[in-house]
Image 1 (cartoon, helix red, strand yellow):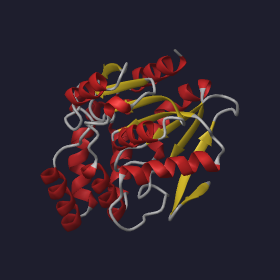
Image 2: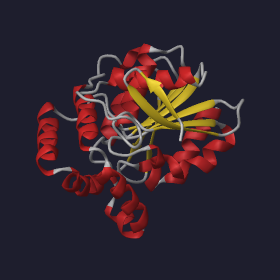
Image 3: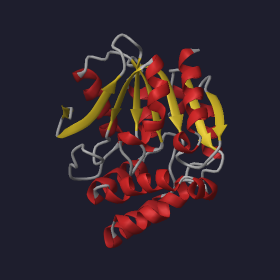
Amino acid sequence: MPFIDSSDAKIHYALEGAPGKPVLVLSNSLGTDLSMWDSQIPEFTKSFRLLRYDTRGHGKSSVTPGDYSAEQLANDVRALADALKLDRFHFCGLSMGGMTGMWLATNTPERLSKLIISSAAAKFGTLEMWTKRIDAIRRRGMKPAAAATIERWFTPAFRGQNPSTVANIHGILESTNLEGYISNCAAVRDFDFRDQLGKITAPTLVISGAHDPSTTPADGRFLADRIPGARYIELKGAHLCNIEDAGAFSNAVVDFLNS
């Protein structure tokens, strides 16, 4: 089980695919782990060497104390890349992972080849919304939060037709460390990139789920309109469109990175 040290944390990762291929880093959403990308692995490993990791506070990575920040999460990615001697890489992040990608693209453009931002926003919700969510989780724990979140992450039709897939993601979310989840909530709460999107120079693809109530297509179009030269596509499904519309997601990413 491989880990690297990133300042005060151990970051769990998986490196797959043939050496020599272009590297694609995959970054998970709030409340999941690196397994959220399982549907993409067969297609992505045909063209890329894949680096997946558990964001700090998630999965098998360390849960360190205090509120996290986008810069801190991005520095974990840089530590991974440095430790594995990966000078340049493509980056694909969903939701919180997209936030991390935006920070990397703006602050370390020399490391990024191309960027995919999925199910994300330049600003995620309001301070009031995040304050209520954090307070509720502290009082009631992850179980009620997981049940409500799953309804936003997948459409009713997908939940009805794919109960085992949904149950697996539900279980991951429910078992996420409470303090780690709250610390990452703080990073998302404090993120506001509305005035910095124009600084992104990496070729960028923005992906939205057509039925995503959390980071809506309007949020995705806002990103694409303000990132120079960005492409925009909408897929079927809600927030975790990489799972709900897995084939289309994989094809869109591969086509973009190989273009």
